[in-house]
Image (tube, rainbow, N blue to C red; front, side):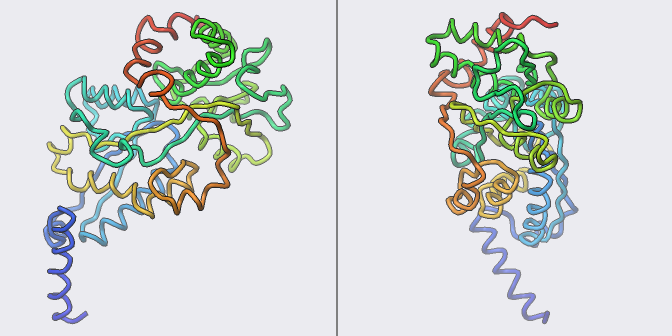
Length: 342
């Protein structure tokens, strides 16, 4: 490249960066490599392995700066607690808004109003909860009400530590409330369901391992992407059962304000999350069996892999995460009332 072309390129890149509200390319290029920590929940491991590679390439091309992204995964509630206890996450991509709200309320790690900082209430992808059974469905499981039958062993994680488990719990609760009439009947139903649960893992991936590799249980209540990953990895060993009703899971993403301001990583951390809404980011989301929320192109491309399900939202059925957490998962809530540890 000629010296003249070099001089032309730098002002253009700087202008583009200024348009996006970012420092000029040359300023980033002169800085040492930056490292981000994404603290997420269990089933996003594969998604963010692919996404982080794409973002690092994008950021290098845009700014000239190298970036590496470390991942931390576990039960969503447990991950939120780790951040509160000092884990220096730059971004939190947790399973449910209630866990992210805990970062607001317990130490101000995230600023209030975080859901308004990005489109779609800061949820660039959605998912839902479905059922996975053994090959050939030997127990004849077709819907939620089959999970409370005698002799059915159900695998699901602990809603005290796992965000996915809370989605599972509330999906079953709302199914029973609609079918049998009222919260009292729903509570009885969920108590019977958890009476069929032999072990509560701390996170969704742990439950998947218990079901798939340790061969425990007749049915796994799973994130949709976990179910598809099982099919992809193990082939015909498992079948997917789509229930008649499930919950629309809307995991939110945010920068962890206290940490990015302390570490000087706000610009790259914010761009990291914005890239999730790009066409490339949305395509990676679809490839990893999450439902793209921000791209019609990606939605159309991956539409065939997602079953049509009657979905309800947490706001519609439970009045939002604040109310649901208090009534169902706080100490003394409905889960504590119905679950007796074996």
